[in-house]
Length: 316
Image 1 (cartoon, rainbow, N blue to C red):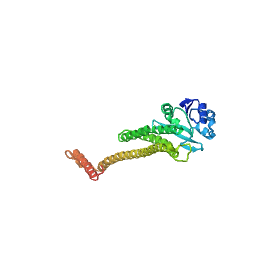
Image 2: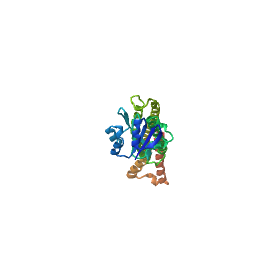
Image 3: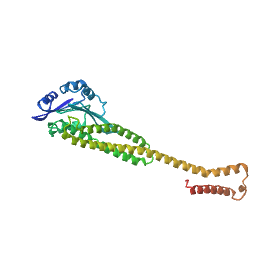
Image 4: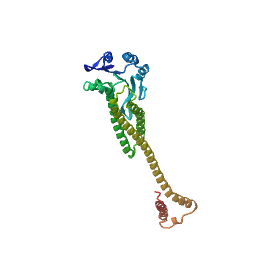
């Protein structure tokens, strides 16, 4: 699907792609949005703009990391929108071509920031009537804002895992921590280059980016940098959770081993006494009245003495 918007002396309105591109020669501005189009369709639609064939090829391939390429009269940008689903980000690539009088966006499937731009443009025509720069800022600003719910969800998940870690019987917590860490790593591989891409737009080396737009792009960069720092801190916390889990398992194992050692140590003297005398001597105590109870009391006294000694050594 191809949607086009045209801004000229008559206002901002939806138009056919050919009409929108034709208005560029009359001082108008155009936004062309391509959704799930193949390379041949994109090439034929955007032919009047003279976009480089490599850009058109990259637009229809979802293998690009966030970047910005300068082609003089226009910029080629790649950014990614994200949703958080079951401890993993669902990423969608958005390819953008920004010229002094036009904006081209390409994506596969519905993207919230692009859909919001289509919805708000009739109510805020100044986003396109003042040039494509404000519309680019609106898309990037909303795209970054939509990362905030992901950060909140990750923070809640980390807090929940910290609480579950101290509850006995939570065997699936380490698996959940590893899955969450992998998801954050996948998001970090996108967010880091995307931050550098937005930062590059704030410099004065690109002719397609108006000077008055750069302060607003710096604000977008600042928020993206803060979220990137948050993501790094969450990754450190999940690593600490795994280390804490290993430490807790080791401590529990040490407690079990220590208890078994105490039991074995208490029982060892009893085993020596009964084995030695039972095989080599006829115990005189059995000829005494209550002699069996006397022998049993001796064994209990030996066990109690061993227990007292272990207690005094702080080994229990």
